[in-house]
Image (cartoon, rainbow, N blue to C red; front, top):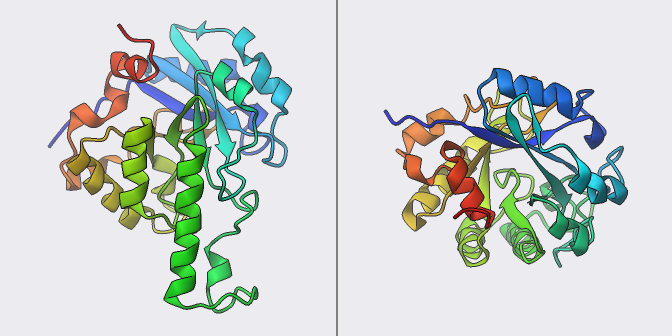
Length: 264
């Protein structure tokens, strides 16, 4: 059985995300140190998320502390994709000033809606046929791919979410082209997760990434300190598909820095 070291967790949310956490960066860095992490990344929700910080918050992250309790701190954003064109909720100049950014589809921010519009009870006049579902899959896939083109975008957040279906062949091929990496989100796989089809979709994603030799990022998506560094729900999938440890970004600080263009 392969071992998958976790030295870093860079999809986490502090109090500035507006929901799910009352913890400050200091609280989270202290927890990360206690769990043996080398790097903690704070990637709060973009401004279109209800209660999240304004663009000024993200603009000023360049002034934030870079180390606490022996843990290196990175600052990013989980951007909301707004539409099929790939528009997001921060200006490119601000995104470029961050260490990294995730792009994610969230309800109700995404103007394309979600998969409920395409079933027989959606009430939108859209047919519940396979054509309707496939059309929405194309919309979501196009939205992801177009959003990848913004500067500083490094990762796709929770691409497993069945409410926003994607053509994974197209999506991961675009990831290779634009040097963007899929996230394997632990929160999607925990008991009671609200996202749908996580296990099935992640098995497809991991199988394709293994074949393509495309690295993946494991993430806790911890809102607050409680789950920082927790990847326990992800490991069984990695073992099941015998995913190569060298393609897991979390096992090497040097690997992450190289992806960010900061390595030697």
